[in-house]
Image 1 (cartoon, rainbow, N blue to C red):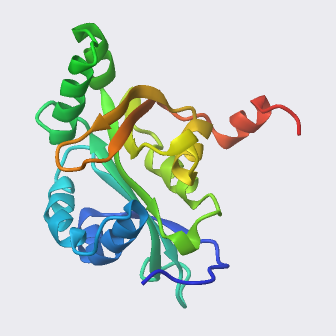
Image 2: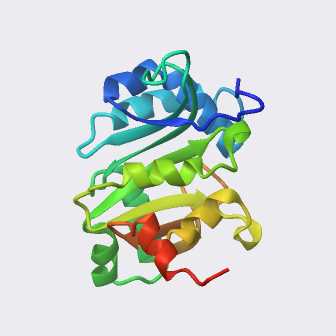
Length: 212
C-alpha cells in the first residue's frame, strides 16, 4: 500500500539486480498503481522485469523513504525507475521499428533513432509521493554517465499532454518520435519520445531559463 501524507524527501538509491528482484513486489505495486492497470497485472509482469535485469547496460534507481537508519535502502519504496541499452532483438525495439516503418519513416531515420539508445523502460512514483520532483530526480540519476547517444521512452497518450509524466518529459527536452502508437497487448495509444544524452544539468537549465 502506498504511504499517505509523505513529508520526508525520499532517498535515491541505485539498486543492484539482486536488490530489485528482492523488492520486486513493492516496485510492481507502484507500477500497477501509476499505470492504472488492473490488480493482478503484477504477476504477469514480474517474470519480464526479472528478465530485464540480465540485459546489457541495465540500471535501476529507487526512491526510498528512509527508516531509522537514513543510510539504509530498506525503507519504504515510493518510486522506481530502470532501463537498459536497446537492441534489435528486444520486443520494444521491434515494436517501435515496425511502427516507424508503417508511419513512413525511411531506414536512415529508423537507424538514427534505434541505432544507439538507452531505453527508459519504467519510471513511476507512488501517488502519495508525487509533486516533489521525485520522478525528475530518479530520471536524472538513472541517465548519469550513460554511454548511449540518446534515450527513448514510451508513455500513454493524455489529452493536452496534461499529466505529471508529460510535463516532466517536455521540461527535460524530450521530443516526439512517434505518436498514437498501439503496442501489442495494450489497446491504449502511446507516444514514443526521445532526446539526446547527456541531459543538461539543473544549473545549466536554470541559467538558460527566462526570469520569473
